[in-house]
Length: 349
Image 1 (cartoon, rainbow, N blue to C red):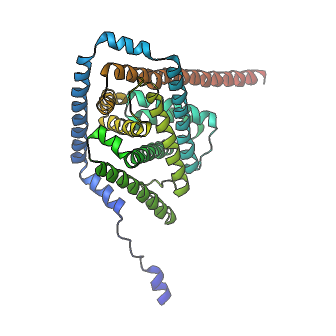
Image 2 (image 1 turned 45 degrees about the vertical axis):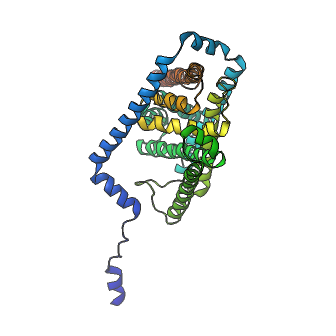
Image 3 (image 1 turned 90 degrees about the vertical axis):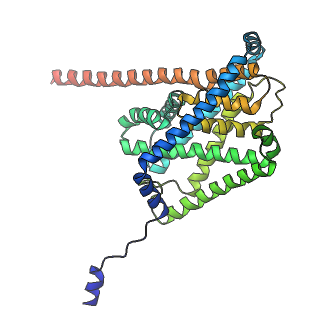
C-alpha cells in the first residue's frame, strides 16, 4: 500500500531556473524591452550619423580620388583573399550547427546556404529574418523543418558572438594602452573590460556544460552545443572575425600607425554597434566607429572603408544572388525533367 501511494504522489517541481525567470520577465515586459531596444538603436544611429555626416562634409574629393589611386593591387588582392577566408569560416558556422542538431547535409549545400545567407543578411540587415529565410529556402527541400532552421540560425549566431567577444577581450587585455588611445579610457579600465569579457565567456562555457549534463534546454526549448562544440564555435568565430578585420586592415593607407590587435578589437566593436543599430549592413554606424577610432586622414580612411564595403559586402551579395538564381533554376530543371520522364513512362505503358 505504501508503495502504491509513493507511486501516486507527484514529484516535487523544481524551482524555476534563471533562464526561465528571464524568459518570463521578457514575456511580461515585452513592450518595454522593445521600446528600450528601439531607443538604443535610434541613439546609436543618431550619434553615428552625426559623426559620419561631419566626416563626409570635410572630405576633399581630390584627396579622396588620390587615396583610391594610391591603393595597390596587392592590397586589393590580399583583401579579397582574407574575405574569402572569412566566408569559408562562416560555412563552418552552419556545419557545426547541423552537427549539433544531428542533421546530415552535404557540405556543398551547407556552403551554399551559409555563404548566401550571410552575404545577403550582411547587406540587408536583420540577420535572423533575412538569413533564416534564405536558409529555409535552401535547407527546406533537403528535409529541414522551419524549427530546425530557426535552431540552426540561433546556434550560428552564437558562434559569431563568441568569436567577437573573444577578439574584443584579447585586444582589451593584450594591448590596453593602444586601445586607450582609441577609446580614451584608462589602461586599467580597458584591461578590466577585457577580463570581464573573458569571465563572461568562461561563465557561458561552464553554464552550457552544466545544462548539457542535466539534459536541459538553455535558450527557450533549444539545447545549446556542449563544451567541445562551444570551443569549436569560438575558434571559428575568431578566425572569421580576424580574417574580416584583416581584409579591412590591409586596405588602410600606409603609415596609419595602428597595430592589428587593437584594430581587430575596434573592428569587432564597430560590427557589434552596426548590428545593434539594425541599419542595413551597419551602414554609417560601422564607418563612423572606425573613423572615430582609427583617426588620421578621413579622406584616405573613407576610401579604404568604401573599398572594403565593395569587397566584403557588395561583391559577395551579388554573387549570392547569382548562386541562388542558378540553384533555383537547376532545381526547377530537375523537377521538370523528372516530370517529363514520368510522363514518358506512363505513355509507354
